[in-house]
Length: 273
Image (cartoon, rainbow, N blue to C red; front, top):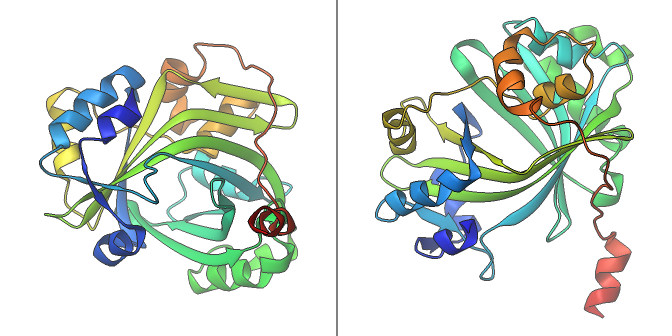
């Protein structure tokens, strides 16, 4: 349903999208929308938006592995709404096996800064080879200066499918995530009926924000890491996301399933031989 709706949008290549709207320092607004409502939104956007297209593909599979300290310092910063918060993750584009190590910093007034390092996909479940990069980013952003003494271990894995739009008039981006799945050990939560729509702007609201507001859909507090972990671990504090959890995450019981796999570099080379 969503891929067919994307077919009506003009394409844009990845390099052009990054050039027009890299937005490594930005304001994010997130919305939870029923999957069935997304095609109507895309139809409205046809005259105004372009869709990321790579070799004719417009929907891409993602995997993110989130890392935290044994005391869940990153999670608790978010749960207690600390003014400065951080996330450490690897993000793998499963279709191409490209991988990045990322440090995201959330500051005052919703401003988000992201630091990225190219990473080996086969190392995506550890930050060992990129720990220096992580520590440097956290020190540069004045986040938890004593964190260097704490190990960072994989805590949660998320999988989803993403489409990315560019709004040329405002050089802003929109991502639409579907097929959302969270894995925490042997616990898995799937939410096939919802989409997370995220607008990424320099500051002002985008056309998509205004379209959603007109339909009565307001921004919600949702974090793929923190909200997903709170949904799977009921003993954790969850005040910032409690309304979102009750409405969208806890309506259905968690289901057990297998995690996605990504080819190693040697497997990619063999397939190209």
